[in-house]
Length: 209
Image (cartoon, helix red, strand yellow):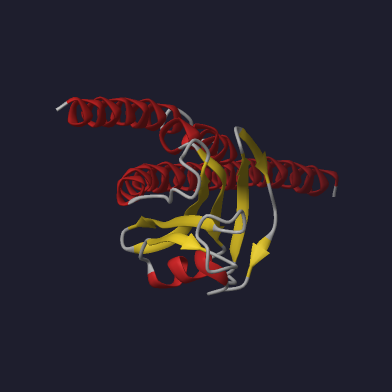
């Protein structure tokens, strides 16, 4: 009973943290700021050693690292991966999450060379726009892997991140359209004034003749 109560309390803390993260990432339309906030808050619910947030380049299909996480520090990045390359590439290509509890260089799962990897897709309208990947638990019994519960939490977070990224892109496209419209109006007004001046000049010439 005590163990069950402790797990329930942890679930409540996780959901409260997810709610706060969702509010933080949806309170801005600046894409780099959204991605930075996501990675800075990942450890609040998963306590991982490292992580990455990658977005798909719609023109080339490559995965571009946007923000990487090392401990509690999130940094902007610009590395790229070819379509389908690595675990993140597989997840982006198939649109399905992937949980690998132990990837070991030796047969002993307790050796330091072992990794626990979790990667989930960012999807909007059934289209993959990126992936969110984390590696290894920070606070854990030695060799304890990432779990199905971690997968559910990261999947929930990824769904909110995808919405926030899409909103940021729509806002950027709207601003670009507005800027183009404003430029077109300015050019039309300028042309109108120039035409008026040319017409007045032409009339003056006629008068002189």
